[in-house]
Amino acid sequence: MVSFADTMAESSNRAALAFRNAIDLLGCDGVIETSASLASAYIRFDPVALSHVEIHRQVEQILREKNWYQEPLPAGRRLWRVPTVYGGKLAPQFDEAAAAAGLSPSEAIKRLGESRVRVLTIGFAPGQPYLGPLGPEFDIPRLKELTPMLPEGALVLAISQFVLFSRPTPTGWRHVGQTAFRCFRPEAEQSFALRPGDEMEFPPISRAELDNIRETNDGSGGATCEEIPS
Amino acid sequence: MSLLVHQIGPACTIQDRGRTGYLDQGLSRSGAADQLALHEGAALLGQNPECAALEMAGMGGTFEATQQASIALTGAPMQASIDGAPVVWNASHSMEAGQKLTIGVAKQGNYGYLNVGGGIDVPLILGSRSAHLTANVGRAVQVGDRLPVGPYSGSTGMKLRPDDRFSGGNLRVLASFQTPLFDAETLDRFTDTAFRRGARANRMGMQLESDGEGFAAKGQLNILSEVITPGDIQMTGTGNPFILLPECQTTGGYPRIATVLPCDLSRAAQTPSGGQIQFTFVSMDEAITLHSTYLSDLTRLRARVEPLVRDPHDIADLLSYQLISGMISATE
Image 1 (cartoon, rainbow over the protein chains, first blue to last red):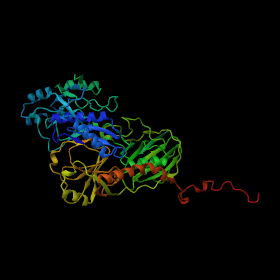
Image 2 (image 1 turned 180 degrees about the vertical axis):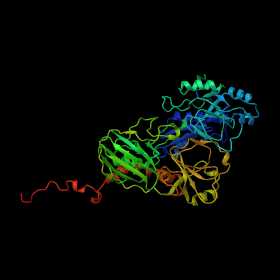
Image 3 (image 1 turned 90 degrees about the vertical axis):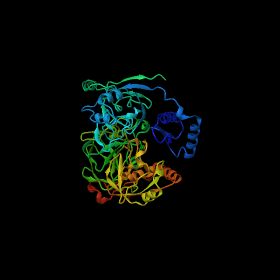
Image 4 (image 1 turned 120 degrees about the horizontal axis):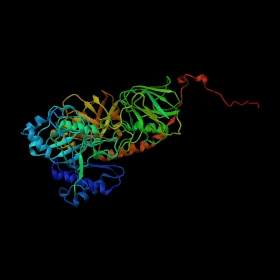
């Protein structure tokens, strides 16, 4: 694992994504798979085929090539707009999240609905994005008690980040919105919707609109997707 | 050819060696919890260890062969019989069309495996036949399912003496990047402690219990989530270790004290509730040597297979066999 920071920062996330791509491009024999988390790149290799000494040497050589914190985001990124119901019965922890951020419910919907966040990493569950950063007013702590089970498509908030749940999940994050977007569709040809570096917005809709979207039942949740010019 | 499921335990899934290459998309490997058992099944049937088998957690079921079938039973030993006649575990057997194989509860360990000549031939999903229930990939096998079986031309009637790995024991571990977050006293106490496997265990992970205080790391609650992997030993908020297994999540924020070597993960997964576990740190060089030995032992399993010699006492229909044939007269 190559770690670029021990706290989350925009530049270290970019560094992790870019460095992981560089390792992939190297196509090293013995590397089994790679991944990027919030601030580090992970390299899984076969220690019999590729010694620790050798992978160390190669990794350090690539690390020295450039200032990874100044690398651009990956190419081929997309902007997703996913219609979201904030608050009400579908997202019952919205009001307390707004209060914790010191905002009225309507102001919180406005700010969250206009926030453009980036897929910082995908993990924990299949296809599930960690999204950020949200404004500093949303740097609210996780709950002490776990909420037993939130549904797929739940938009949850803590520490200036969203997570969009790909599976029913117990969590300590606050359930602020509900979407019909499926991040992971194992039956589909493209099983995973999102890629690290993609951007997302969650414009507010009514519950009736979400019910309409659900009737189409194609997993897209009424989302739009467009290329971000690099 | 298929196996028709008449009865089935609550946690039986089709498993192979697991899925590689989707870690970056949040999908962990899955695959058999006891990979050694999968290789033993393949060795007994003389086939490729990539074949999928039925993993049976705690108890099996009843399976009818729709045509002649070849099977091998490996992993946690379970009561097994074909049409009521007991059959040996860690061995391969033949089933005629219409015969029923009944597999009961585990006598030792957790995960038993029903391997089939030709492998269980369900469609590949993202490169593997392994169910991953926490990720909603595949599902548990249910009554009425027909498990499709691939083509097979090998023979049966072989046995293999398994490694005893069904009652806990010593697990060898490697220090990892978060090990230094634990101070020397905590690490010493960790290796001196006799842990018991707790009641909370599934294919995601298994909790360990011990007497005395928990094992805390410095700055335990402020650790950034990082990639986690089967074998990692996470310390939860209460300071109880969890050994992560094939369906673990792909990232986690609990600190990891060490990682169990792949060669000892089958033993970890097979440790029954209440079974004792202790940890021993090995150096990176020792770990690589142990790992290489493990891999070459897997490839040599086939050479250790021997004919299953049946005890005449166990043969219920002994008198129906043609025991003497090809007699010739000494005077001719």
